[in-house]
Length: 594
Image (cartoon, rainbow, N blue to C red; front, side, top):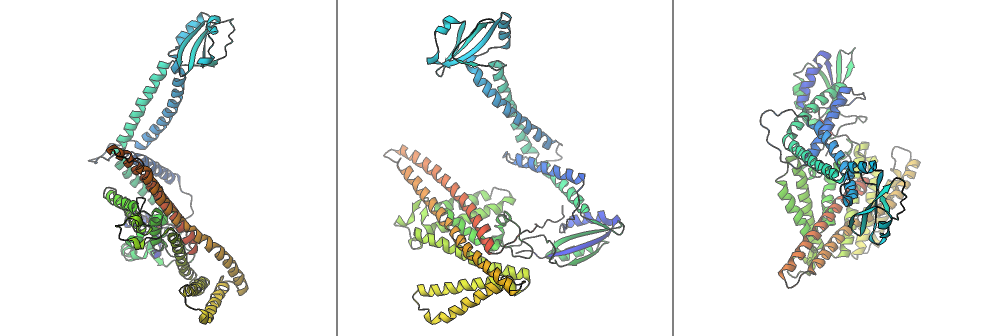
């Protein structure tokens, strides 16, 4: 759900404004309303520094070094600047190494031909020309015709040098080579020096990652507090010939008593009010422990608008089921569940909710794997001792199950859309068109279901016709309740076209759940069969058998888990959000705090 917000406006005498802001920042509850003002150079500079620190911290965190415990005051080291310089130097070295490797490869077969050697030959009016050709194309007659010396023979090629006098004409059918300016020994020396420098730079990065991440975070915190304070001043309006300062912001309704207790001790005039239709209210989500795990997923798309429902608790159970459906293997689910629970104990506190979410998804995979009947690619229905054969669904049943689940989520989304329309419009009439669609689906579904179980529905045809008539009337007459009846009818007809064409497409999208689950099971079975071919009478045959199983199922788990995350995201953000009437566009609640 979305936490209710209250708008506050403060009027403060200009001399008391800075102390008031300092106290307000300590309270840490007010989301300041931003004014459309150009920020000054100091704020831009601070924001740039924060951005650079974030980049540096992200780079150092990837080093995977254990941070050293900080005791006492740390030495002030320009870590950000040094890291930027070293990264630039590392990039230049990599480019230099690439060029050196090419030159070494070119000079390798020739050995050391130093510039001094070439200069001495030039003094004798002799020019050194370097050639290469294949063994079969080398003509021995060239030895008779020219002053020629074979330098090397390797990889089916002949490398030779011709000593050309100034007026001598050389006609040799071979590729002439231009050697690097520096001799081979110098090139090799430079390459080794570069390697040593790279090792020094990498060691410096590791040292910074171990010693200075805490220092960087402290610096970032101070800068962020300073910047937030300056931004708060920047978003303040000056009133009454700049003698009075006006500041506006939002707080969660639950914090009202605490804030007003603080304000009563301050020399400030304030008023509070409920949000109006024109206000852009910040969004703070407030969900139970289970739904809160899925908030990082909803954040990937957009925050809801203040007037609509938060869809996180509504899509959470479906997302969990979809993930399990796509992976669809009990063994894989157990690995994900056990692995995430183990690693959850070792990660930072901020990362624990993500690992808990992964464990929940692993548990859902175990359950859906029991329904699909696979365990590391083995079909459980063929295992005589397996006790839960009755719950295993055949592939065709899984196909229809995926469509049924999709239809349920779409239908569920229509109820949410109705609630959103009534909530945003402020009246029941705004949701009547969607209620008409719900009634239409229920009417068709009820009578088709009765016919399927053998009940004669002819005697209930009047009820059916009344239900259909009422639903159609609601769809057409209340499609656009703010307009007149004719406009609303045409809008309703357009909605009918969109709904009929869209719902079938949406339903077909859910087939991907079945397809991904089946493909995961088939790949697991294939890896099992490939590994089984290596089994023989020898104990050593188990080595390739186990290696293939580990690599094969490891790849399959990775691919299945990736697909099981991406495709349910699409079903949630496209099919479900669309049918639930999600508009979004909300801005996250960010209090002015330290």
